[in-house]
Image (cartoon, rainbow, N blue to C red; front, side, top):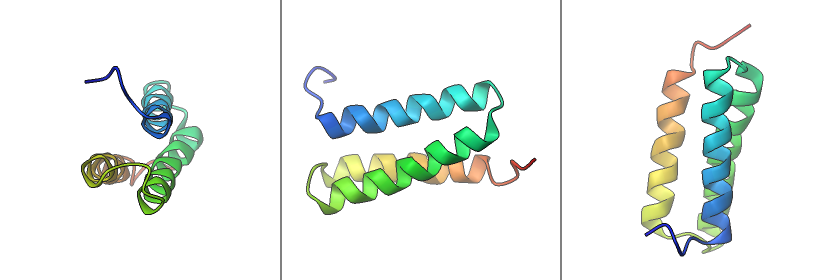
Length: 75
């Protein structure tokens, strides 16, 4: 399943991993940046036809999940 991932999926997964790392280390600004980037890149790749509808839905669901979790993260 994970052996044949596209370059775009790998990039989105990397952004997601960075987001999780920043959250665990309490780097809020970087975590917000990664969250926004995840939403933007998944939208861009879907519109360009580089990821499927199911992949797009998965990344957008994660984007919404982290948006909800991080809504009160301020300095």
